[in-house]
Image 1 (cartoon, rainbow, N blue to C red):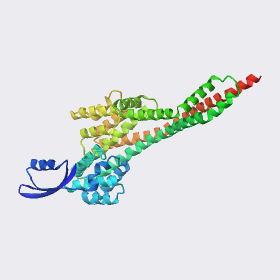
Image 2 (image 1 turned 90 degrees about the vertical axis):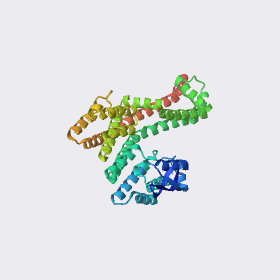
Image 3 (image 1 turned 30 degrees about the vertical axis):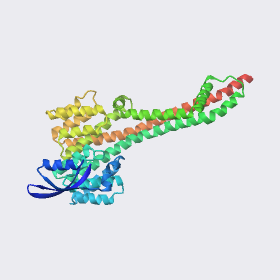
Image 4 (image 1 turned 180 degrees about the vertical axis):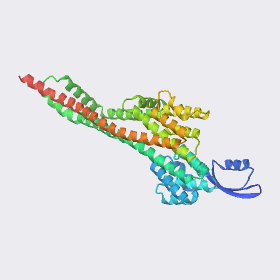
Length: 404
C-alpha cells in the first residue's frame, strides 16, 4: 500500500486528493468507479510512510494510545481541526513508531477521510472499540467527549490488567528462583558432599541416594536439562496461544478455586465498562454488545455476548439475555442492575456502577490473593529446604549408629 497525490475531473470540476491505494491501477479504478477521470497521479515517497508497516511490527504501548486520545480531545475541544491537532502531536511525540502512525493519519485526513476511517487502516494499534467510539463521536458532533471517554476506558482497563498481572508476579519470581537455586545446589554443593560420603564407607539412606542421583544426572546433562526446561516453558506459552490452549485456559479460569470468582468479576467489569463507554458515546446497544464481545478474552463470555446481541436485536432485554446464560457466567448482581437501568432509562449509569463495583472487588481480591499465596510459598520453600537438609544429614546419623 502506498499514498498517492492525484488530480481528477468529475462533473466538469477539477479535484485534488491524497489517499492510500495498493497500486496505481487501484487508484484509476476507484476514480473511474466514481465517474471521474484522472489528470495526474504521483506516489508520495515518504521514507517514514513507506516504512510504516515495518514500524508496526512492534506494538505501541497502550499508555501512548491513552495519552494520544487525551491530548487530541483537549485540542479538538479547543476548536483546532483534527489535521492541525495531529501535526502538533507529531511534533510532541518522541516515539518514532507513533510518529509514523500519526503522519499516516494526517495524510489520510488531509485527503478527505474521516478520523474513524483513517484509524481503521491501523487495526493493530486502534481497536474496534476505539474506532467505533470515534465514529459515534463524529456522527454526534461530540468527538472530544468520545475521545475523553476512550482515554478513561483504556486507562481503567489498563489498571485492571496491571493489578491482575501484579498479583502473579510475586509467586512466579519465587518459583523461578527456587528452580535456579535448586539446580545450583545440585550441581555445585551436592558433589562436594558426595565425595565426603564416599570416604565414610557406609550405606547411604534412600533420600540421600535419590538426591545424589539427581545431582549426577544434572551434572552429566546440564545443558539438556536447561534446554528441556526452556522448551517446556516456550511450549507452554505457545500452547496457550493455540485455540485449544485458549479454550483450556478459559475453562480453568472459570473452574479453578480461588480464581474462578475473580475471573467472572474481571469479565463483568470489562463488559460493563465497555458498554457504558460505547452507549454514552452514542453507539447503538446491539453494536455495543458486539464490540464488547471483541474486547473480552474468555471465549465463554464472548459467545454469551454474541448470543445476547442476537436476542437484543429481536427485542429481548439485555438483562434477560445475561440472566438466562448457561453456567451463570455473569453474577446475578449484573442482570439485576441492568434490569433497573432498563426500567429507569439510566442504563449507562447502572453499567458504570457495575464496572466500578467489580473493579473494586477485583482490586481487593488481587490483594487477598497475594496475601494467601505468600504463606503457601513459604511452606513450600520450607518443605523443599527441609527435605534437602534431612537427606544430607542422614548419613551423619548412620555413621554415628555404625560407631556405636
